[in-house]
Image (cartoon, rainbow, N blue to C red; front, top):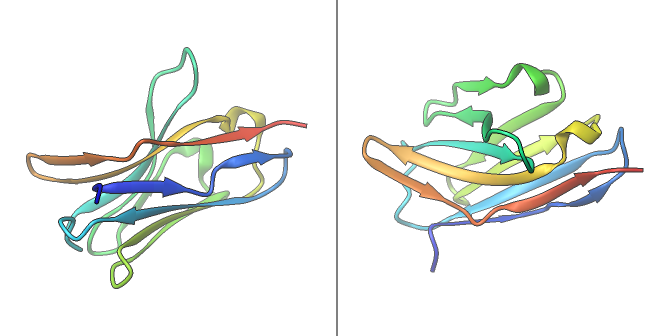
Amino acid sequence: QVPLVESGGGLVQPGGSLRLSCAASGSIASFYTMGWYRQAPGKQRELVASIAGSGNTNYADSVKGRFTISRDNAKRRLYLQMNSLKPEDTALYYCNAKRAGTDFWGQGTQVTVSS
């Protein structure tokens, strides 16, 4: 068992949609803050969206109105619904869970937006 495993990435045309999923191990409790990060080649890794245990969410300006982060604590799943995708959304997307000094990362799932 690994802490976090992402899935749902792939190739999609501009304007299309994808939903990323992240399966969390039992060691990650519902009070952890979870988020999606992405990094494109030659670019700085950035926080795309985060969601606290309380349900409070935060989004990068570049994805506001297009992406929605959610979590299902009972299923130990984190999701990122991505709509109206743009070529600049192309990146390796990572699932993250953190609490104080504890930080978990998935291996990433590739999202490519291209016609």
